[in-house]
Length: 186
Image (tube, rainbow, N blue to C red; front, side, top):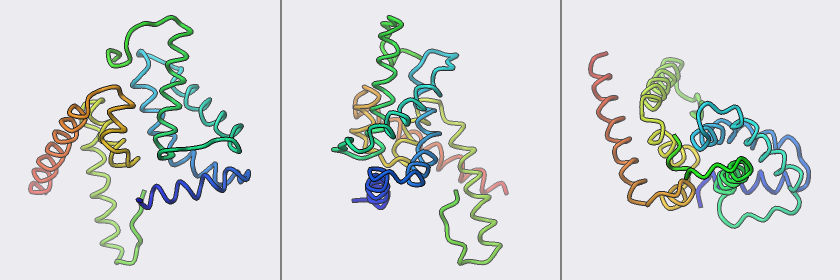
């Protein structure tokens, strides 16, 4: 069990008893990635992406005492967003398949130079991640930031696990090669 999964279970337990601060932490932790995911599943331009994510969080809070999560909390949230989008698309009678639509965690025990270097490195890596194609970036973030397994990502995006593996391989290869090249220039 990962630390992220354990943290999520603790947050969930606190949310179930009505602790709004825990809910705020959950919201901050997942909102931006869920928004990006939502935007990737809705036709462009879409103002509904934010509404969908906010509705999922609102529903989560309202039903907090009856929610039973059988996988990970992040997978539950992603599936909830995906289902809400399916409902939205059904309501609009859109039949196009979804696939066809287009921190700092380091403790500052080191010196200030090390912290500054860490922040610069993290910013550079984030810039490189943003250069990835949208779908590849989404898969990479779902795996690395939300700690979803390849199978969970494949199920959520309705693609094969081999597609997820290929996208991750290409993303990591690009990041390694580009970062190495950028670092050698500096």
